[in-house]
Image 1: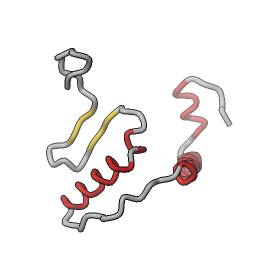
Image 2: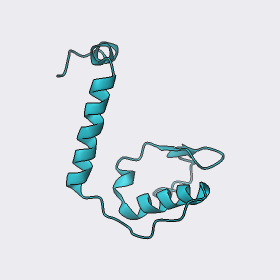
Image 3: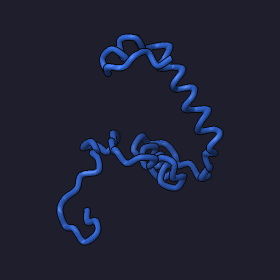
Length: 93
């Protein structure tokens, strides 16, 4: 990938050989509704499912609701005290 006239190879993530697992450090990449929909449709197509036609916008309020749900799920299923110990901070509750 070229950035600012710099031709060095810069790795922004990885994709599995079959294209079903992706990883990237690019912050907020899934906030882009079009990108997210295309990725979902790519994966659906690889699984033999029909593409989704509608490009639904994911509102900030819904995103926050999802983050809060996920955070609660993690708190309820992880040993948070141990996690705080591992990362070297006091309890952040």
